[in-house]
Length: 215
Ligand SMILES: Nc1ncnc2c1ncn2[C@@H]1O[C@H](COP(=O)(O)OP(=O)(O)OP(=O)(O)O)[C@@H](O)[C@H]1O
Image 1: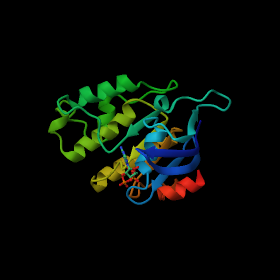
Image 2: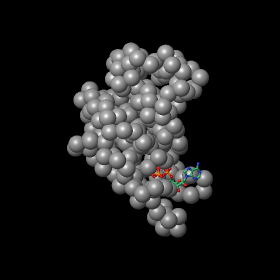
Image 3: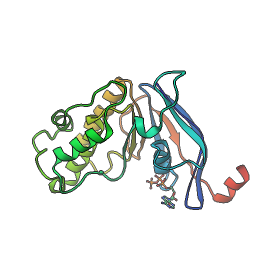
């Protein structure tokens, strides 16, 4: 299994946000993106997730060497700043929607909604409307979305911002289990996620006129 990004460049509007970003991740590997606010971390994650078209370069995912590459949106789960849950549906209805919408990749299986709720420490409240929950509980269930459908690549944008310490530890456990299963994770974060051995990519951002010289 291999995720490769080759010489990526991306624009938001007219502005070039980054260029010449390359990396390769194999089964069981994680990469942490760091860099100041506005340096392009979220933009890079959206490009890798297939939500934003790169200006240059490409992202490829292969389950096996020699196999045709798969589109990122088929193999990844994206946890963005927003939780992507409907306030008026119950937690269970939201998670069932995501399980059915995403499906499992390559003969693997996600957890049941009940197992996933237990895994994020909130087994007893899946019958409640999502909108009733506290901000931390809502974020925990957004994390549960990652494990109700198995996708090999997790793309995580500030996953633990504003969570308590126990949620940080719980989430580090989910990511470790994902990596141990042979998954891949990319996370933009200002907080340590406890990912020992993770690669690091420092996003630096740059001025538009500098880029013009390079490109
Ligand atoms: N939709 C958009 N249209 C135009 N510019 C945008 C858009 N979204 C983001 N940008 C700009 O792109 C740049 C990179 O933003 P991005 O969100 O990728 O940074 P970041 O490193 O994730 O920042 P933070 O650490 O604050 O989350 C910023 O200058 C931002 O203003």
